[in-house]
Amino acid sequence: MTLTDGAPHGATSGGFEKTAGWLDWYDGPSTPTFRLPAGAVDAHCHVFGPGAEFPYSPARKYTPCDASADQLFALRDHLGFERNVIVQATCHGADNSALVDALRRSDGRARGVATVRADITDAELDELHAAGVRGVRFNFVKRLVDRVPTDSLEAIVAKIAPRGWHVVIYFEAEDLPDLYDFFSAIPTDVVIDHMGRPDVTKAVDGPDFALFLRFLRENPNAWTKVSCPERLSASGPRALDGEQHAYVDVVPFARRVVEEFPDRVLWGTDWPHPNLKDHMPDDGLLVDFIPQIATTAELQQKLLVDNPQRLYWPEGA
Ligand SMILES: O=C(O)c1cc(C(=O)O)oc(=O)c1
Image (cartoon, rainbow, N blue to C red; front, side, top):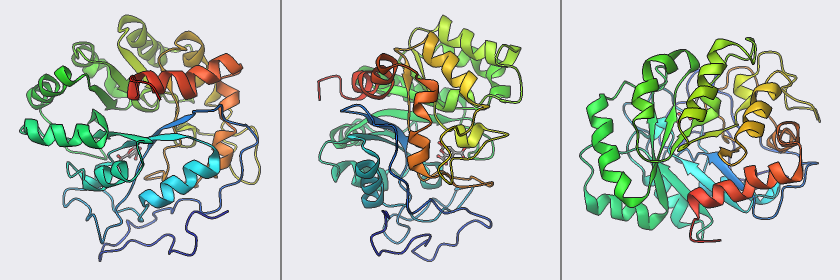
């Protein structure tokens, strides 16, 4: 199947030009061999534009190819997910229009994580909430954003905490020592993107990953997405050409987290996979990665259904 259904694939509309070397998302994902449990949530994915309708931010660090809500929903249905959590991508800055449009068109089957500024008003937050936003994202990855001052982030937390929203944080492993105390002080639930980006060429028992595990142990309000093996893997094999045991170097890291914190893990495709330089995975084969890291039906049910439901649809499905 293709997600485009005749529409252009790999285009960037609105007069924008893709970043040189940009890899377009994979249009023709295989049907997963692994059957997702009923109610499964793709808890980390994005929409990009389309640029002609939802222009990319002037402050962006990359220009993607368009990846619309319709294409995301086609992927959801093809892979067998029931719902999505759509995370604001940095190429849209703090303009959440594309995200909100996608949420509104999802028939309640998507929740969102927005990027907001400290001066956001209550009325604007109300509108985001009504659309389905339940969290904000703080990004500390230097190649993606300019650093936002800590007092602005604290002001945002003060505004969103009373609404029961949470904070999604994206950072690289080498920055965790500096950010540890700030993250520990966040009073809401905290969701760490992509396992804090471990260097998987290092030992799973080494000091870097130990610090990440310690953070999860010391902060019972902290969750993590065991996502993005395609981004973290150094030696593959890639999720292409029917590979059923992709990204074996990431498996020990993700499995460790899933087994120690089964009630605080989430999984997402990361479609449309911004900024991959090496290869673009077949999303069907990425789903087939899941049983390598959540090895029992019980762990899969928590990872894919119960945990995202508790965080994003606490009122029930
Ligand atoms: O590693 C990345 O480049 C990346 C970028 C973004 C974004 O631009 O928002 O989101 C992600 O989840 C991952």
